[in-house]
Image 1 (cartoon, rainbow, N blue to C red):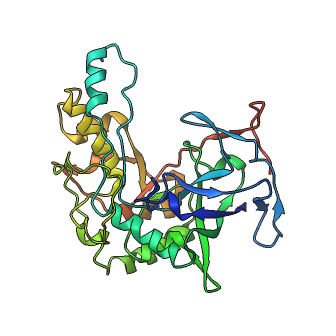
Image 2: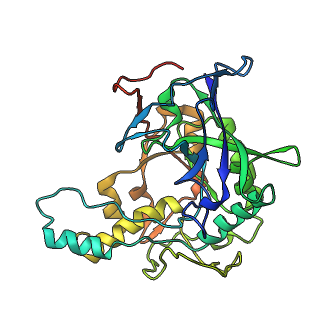
Length: 335
């Protein structure tokens, strides 16, 4: 096992309200060059440069270059911030879906946001701005990885912790966001027990702040169609969007459910909708003890009416790996 290190820069203009990036991941862009990638086999070995990602592509939900316009996308490992702009996926090809129904769905499908998504993003940008007004140097670190395919998810995002320096002190942004109460833990099977424990400790501190945890609820029946992504916001203060929300992982499924319900494709409860997609996860205590031998559960099994019965830190989701291939489509297996 080893560690991938990416040396790059975070441009602050990418964050809302100026840009589209939110507080945890979906498109945190890190500027890189041909000499930005390093790997070491274990903690005792020195880092050595690797160039395998410079022309590589991901083959997952789609096929795309991992480095595009000298930038990579990074998903902050182990945390989830409120969604700033989430749109339900397009309807899949199905004979039961007429062109008219598909058109209606597309018209009603908007970019929805959660309460506190703007505040969380604003807080991250403000912290980075305290280091530098425009660009912040960073290290992107993926620990406990063996093969190149393990550092990216099915969407082609590098899954990692992001470190920056403030006054010569290293700050792990994943941990900082959790300590500040702007995110909830969202664990995956690719994470080590130590990584989960660190974020659980940080989240415990974050719960004491009047931020996400104060407003986090389990009721999926309170969806607001009016809560949509806002552009060109010029007057905003952290806390302006304080109000109730559900955990982001559940919110994304809720958006899909509500959009299909709008056009009559879903007529039952949200638990019945989730039963069709089968989101698998382990309970954290069981996974730590038994790893992949632990019992596998599904989100739809833990509803009481419209209320979800588990907390974000109770779950460990199965990581959806993708393949990393070279310019000829051949899988890259070594560093």
